[in-house]
Amino acid sequence: MTSSLLDMKDIRVSYGHAEVVQGVSLTMTSGSIVTVIGANGAGKTTLLNAAMGVIPSSGTILYDGKPVPGSVEARVASGFCLVPERRELFSTMTVEDNIELGGFLRSRAERAETSAELYERFPRLAERRKQLAGTLSGGERQMLALARALMSRPRLLLLDEPSLGLAPRIVADILRIVSELRDSGVSILLVEQNARAALEIADFGYLMELGEVKLSGTASDLANNPALMESYLGTANAG
Image 1: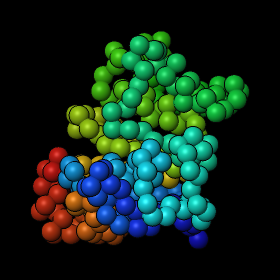
Image 2: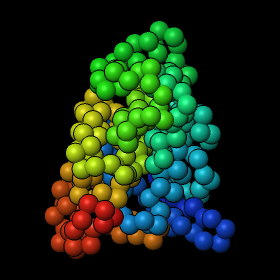
Image 3: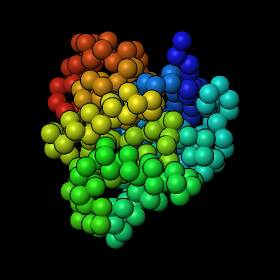
């Protein structure tokens, strides 16, 4: 039986007087991809940042059935890792050095083993390991952001808009890699505007509108929902 890895219950986040996440509850099982889709301003990224502990929130967050650690650092140590929308790479550092930074909690031997695995998974990064991150293409930068996150060997990977600004062929490559990560045992909470692509690889999905969950269900059920199809799946950038 698949166990519950993350449970977010009645999560609320406010900026000033504006409550941008309004009592959202979300659960995901270990070894799954759960996607949160919706339009710009729906509160998706805010929910992801609340899960990571980047911003304060109210409500309950359980990880493996226990209250989640309080700080970002403690969540990273317990197996969380966030790949933010802007990727936040160190542009003046090499690909190799960016990847190494992701393993700061690991021993030298663990870093060497993991980086070797990552260069196999991302051969383009292996070819460019001495190249400055700021000179990479958009797709390569997203691969580097993923590789840096994977250096920490996360159990739970939080991905914020990994397809943003990428050509359709590159989006397909990135989401194929995300799907392979799930198959290797990494659980993934995926925030995406590209609803169609996200639902193709996800196991379960939540549709957010104006800070609330409006629909949830298996990815296949959501992809075949006529109202959702019309509102969010008409174009790749509809959500």
